[in-house]
Image 1 (cartoon, helix red, strand yellow):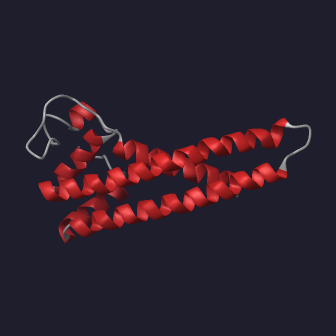
Image 2 (cartoon, rainbow, N blue to C red; image 1 turned 180 degrees about the vertical axis):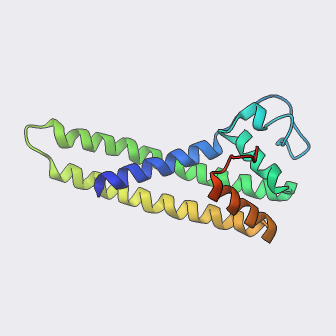
Image 3 (cartoon, rainbow, N blue to C red; image 1 turned 90 degrees about the vertical axis):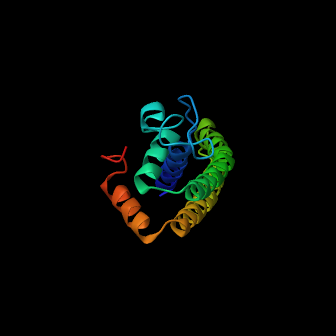
Length: 159
C-alpha cells in the first residue's frame, strides 16, 4: 500500500507539471498574451505544457475570460504541486534512512508514509478544487466536449 501511495502521489505531481508547464514558441495572440495560434499552440509547445492546453481551449472555443479563469485555476494547482514536491524529496530521504542502517528503521518508513498520505490527500483536494473551478466556467456543451476529450485520451484529434 505504501508503494501505491508513493506512485500515486508522484503521478499526480507529474500530471500537474505536464498540464501547467510553460512553453514559448514566439509571439502573442489576441487573448491576453496567450493564444491558439502565434504564441502558444500545438505547433510551438507541442502536446506538453501550455501549447497542448491551448489546443484544448481552442477546441472548446473558450472565451478569453474562460481561458483566464482556467489558467488561473491551473496555476494554483501548479503552486500546490510545487509545495508538495518538497514532501516527496523529504520522503526519499526517509526511505533511504529506512534501509541504510544496520537494522530496518520502521519509524522512518512510518514517517515517510504519513507525509505521503498527507501530501496525496492535499493534492487530491487541490485537483478537485481545480476541476470544480474549470467545471464552473464552462457551459454544458464545453463540459461535454472536455469530458469526451478526457475519455478519449486528451490529445487525439484535438490539437
